Image (cartoon, rainbow over all chains, first blue to last red):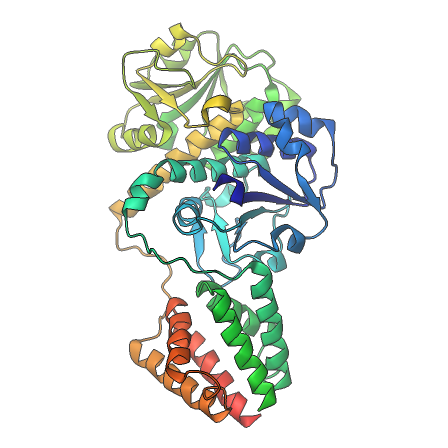
Amino acid sequence: MNDKIRIVLVNPSHPGNIGAAARAMKNMGLRSLYLVDPQKFPHPEAIYRASRADGIVKNAVVVQTLDEAIKNCVYVFGASTRDRVMSSPVLNVREMSEKIINECADDEVAIVFGRERTGLNDAEIRRCQYQVKIPAVEDYSSLNLAAAVQVVTYELRMAMLTQDVVLAKDNKGESVDLATAGELEGLYQHLEEVMAEIGFLNTNKPRMMMSRFRKIFNHAELDKEDVNLLRGMLKRILAF
Amino acid sequence: MNDKIRIVLVNPSHPGNIGAAARAMKNMGLRSLYLVDPQKFPHPEAIYRASRADGIVKNAVVVQTLDEAIKNCVYVFGASTRDRVMSSPVLNVREMSEKIINECADDEVAIVFGRERTGLNDAEIRRCQYQVKIPAVEDYSSLNLAAAVQVVTYELRMAMLTQDVVLAKDNKGESVDLATAGELEGLYQHLEEVMAEIGFLNTNKPRMMMSRFRKIFNHAELDKEDVNLLRGMLKRILAF
């Protein structure tokens, strides 16, 4: 389970934060770290701050885009202090952790953190299915990056430790083959093209409209067959 | 309440950790910081790492002994990764936080953290009434000092927020105007008609296909605007 949960840091500027995030992960039993376009990496400060978690830093996967970091993930959570960006539900860290531990048994999961100063931008948050908030005080809500990773990994561990209790709860039994983030993105692009083609996109504010479509389908937790059905419908609309 | 809870750092060696601990406190709504015999303080690194929580660093109470830091406190909790030192129960951070929020309404409370490398010694832990543990993994259980303060202050805030929720149960925050069952049924009929019209329904098993559409949209918890968007799209498909 723990290896299925990856921590993704987008464009971090301070190598010390990368090391401190790695330490937080190791303390809580995680080890899969992705770095999207880090500003200074590799860097001795990252190794130093990692302490005995230097192995996580050395094995970090460095990629150039967020898409590469999340593409085979079924669930993608974006940490942001901002007000709701998508219209999808905003989860707090505890709700997210319970969801991951209860529902994502064998799925690849990504938890995405933004830049130290500016966090994730709107487009990046929209690439996530859920926006996640750490409930800090309103007028000083931005945690240090590694501190945010610490809170998230701590809650994941707490959720894992209480998993036995949870398993006794309502276990759905059936396993569904959920769509990956890449498959969803393919659906959204297809949808946008078809909506433009039939002239529906232009009659509305196109970005807001696509946001609402994303909200609807993100919330629906589509499996692969659902995506096939919806894309089949889109093809048929144009063939009609 | 928040001003009654103080964070006590015993003999910290890195001023950066003092600053980072202050930031964690401010993020979570605390501000009373005591430093017992800090090795380097005041120090610009403490101010730098505090970011906008520099006021907490500047107002920190510096004392020479743990006794001075906790003397007017009714409850004293000592954070330690060690096996039980006192015969009192060892609490985890969540249990401690619930205890503080539920039982210590007007009492002064101290949460004591030890040195970066060696933590609290036996004598210091015995000065506390409770030993508190952060449930990290066994073979790498020692968190960075500021990270430990972050987890503790985060749990305190969660306990406070949960209590607020309990106190003001019917303050539900934002409400979305969910679609009624009748509106959903209207959507499904409209969808079925349009799918039949464009010849998509016939190419599949119609009942199974409509079941899958229902599953998708039922799961999505559509609000009224979502239904309007989807029906607008359906109308447009036929007009195209």
